[in-house]
Length: 352
Image 1 (cartoon, helix red, strand yellow):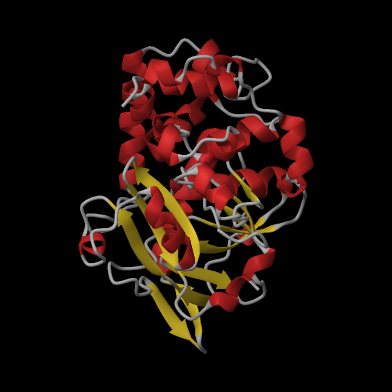
Image 2: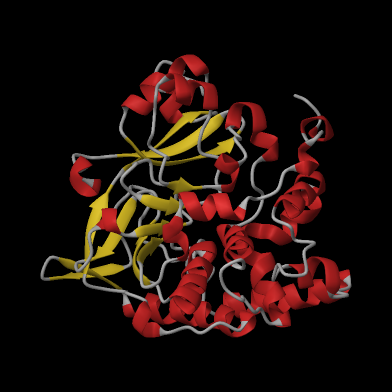
């Protein structure tokens, strides 16, 4: 495998072309849209950003196995945040590595991600050749850098904890400094007009101060957690390991998030809103009257039972045609040799 600095050679002259993005994806800065978000800290922060600055409404959640969406919307008309949907008819934004091979994708004449806004796709990256260069931060960091060209996005100094927490940015910066700095450059973090500039180029945060601030953040986060080991307070769990809907109750064939979960997740979202200086308007967040769709989660490649039970299939070029034929809903390459993805379960109609 090539060294990271070899892969990054001549990449320092690449910059996000805001005008090109706004021309190709004009819906990203439009007002009064409905969205469905990933039910974790990145999704919550994206929901806060879009509801505060563009008056968007959060109408549901999707975690790759279960989609809960308000009965008054149609999923294909919503914009998915922090989730990449493999359907040309559906608008989505995410930061995961989603195309194993650009060459194979073009050879198969696929267009599923034509309506997906992805920093990795903007740079032509795929998992086969560029996995080490994949976007290392959260969707929120991408959206702030992008949309600050359309709105004046103010962020409190205290907001550094929320920004460093999302997708483990505080770990990524020091674990993958070469790639992180390259993406700093691509998103123009050094530009004083970028709202993130103050945290990474101006403020004199000492490491010990950041550690103390993060320690305080974790304690606040934990106060919204539950009894389960996976319930840390920053993630709304809507499906169990068997892909069954959980932490909801049903009434008149509609689903509602359990009240305790609504209270705790709302508390976590408001805590971040207060940190960063954005408003949390409960009227813009939907927690009930949901319809539901269930999908099947699979893995191609890596050391897993799905691979072993299907002829030892790996994430190789020869297997990608059959991979796409399964009916992909969404996916994310989690390592150089494995991709997690969701497929339809007799519900292809959901995006038609």
